Length: 298
Image 1 (tube, rainbow, N blue to C red):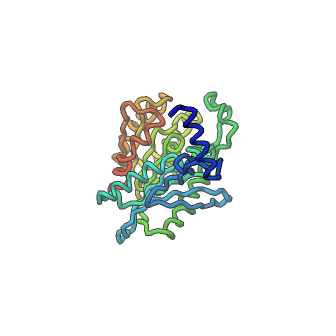
Image 2: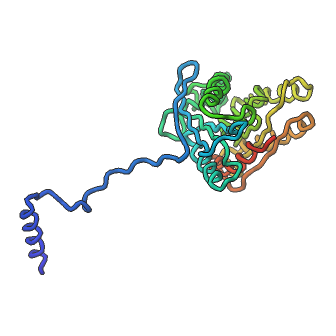
């Protein structure tokens, strides 16, 4: 059959059907599929005292909680970090591993983006004057809300989690990366007993010309002098060999050395540098080791 004859036959068929614009369903463009929803997870909003709406992501086991409640890991930058931690927990739960019998709580923002500029306000102290030259490009954003964010975690989010789920009041850990890692150090120095384990990944110690060092010295002095009340959380420092800002791994390595003598006064700390990892890949590399460190008990 010639090409012309084929086209005439197709035209006749279409006219016979009486629907010149109709096409077989297989030719039609498929409707967009619904987005993937993480199993064993849920999200809800929780406002801070000043009315800011945080997006809370929760991954929890199907099985009933242990008598003392689930251990909890709080993951900062939840929009970017939660899914990796949640799926690792779920797979471990599928394999009946103890690390799967936990709750992962991502603390995030009402955005589809991986990160939100609100994190600058939440995680770091306000700009020092004069502003360090390396930070000038960030001055268009608001900073200095870390004390308020700490209060949100401890006084708003933690009680709400206890209301919704059965959680262990003492087995609660914190993970933060970059600015979030700096905030994790702030929590250790200023709320040393708030979390039983803290993981600071590639912490931005350079902020404000390393202003956090003053808080570190004050914490170390109080610990050595026996002036801290109650237990002190364990600390794990991780960084990447290829962190784009070299000071993020040199500062972390130096901090690890400074903290070693504090083991004589009760501070348990450890350090790992991941070979071949960049600043943005450190969190993914650290998921399993974070879970092990966070949920080791006591």
